Image (cartoon, rainbow, N blue to C red):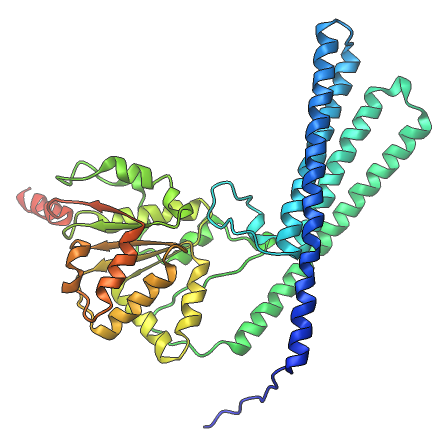
Length: 405
């Protein structure tokens, strides 16, 4: 039965140019954020000036207990306002001017990758409530020198801040849910039909209120079993770089967008280590996707046949780590090799791959056919930690031991 497609009209060049010009005006806000950076410097100066005065008065014996408490509260007040400035500078610039490329950085704030106008408003409101609390505490500590009128209005203003923050937090939930429903509806309208060969969980773009938990990331990763690095029998392999694996367990390779390649005979624990790193990455807040080499080949081939390979590769960017398991057990033809080359080339210096195989990279021409094999290996190995594991099969050892018993 033929399908009817809606006819859409492309915007005229004039409209497109005008829209781009208006969108480019967002850069007019950039100097404003640099001005806030200068204000941050002023607060740094004010902090150390107040601290120096406090130290001098304490050393000379001129500081009473009340003065010390008020001075410390003033320092806390300065720090909280400086924190508010950082939140406005980073969050506002990310939301309204341009993306800040900190994905995968170990110091990235947990809210930065999910920042939007609702999140920013709620965080600003709660920060203002905190600053107001410190001001009100200063007034009550110095109550003998504060008029009742000031105490009354200080309390009323503080309660107004609390109420406004509560209202903003309440409103941001339905607004975020409505936006998410709209995104899902648009995705269902425009997404092509997918073959149901294997249920790969698509990447989710979440807001702060809908951020997946570690357990949700673990389930979405598609691990065949949950393995931990701590459970790996490091005494079994004859040759095994324990320090290298311990360093990989710190997940610095994810932040550096490096690759990891485990090489060794069957049964030496390559998949265990790959899954262990993936589990640890999920627990650290990263999105991970696991599949065997054969499953990746089928997925990429399906996307190519549907004419959406570029969209598929772009969607995989939402995952900080992709795991390609069991390379070497099934040979691939030139067309499939070209698909793997596009996957590795697309993620080159952009995100991490964890690969397990039964032979070193220099012998991948025995697995992959076609002219792109050398270029694929070159990109994979350029920023890669290669861990060689030598030994007998752990599974065969267990089976032989059981037979002997």
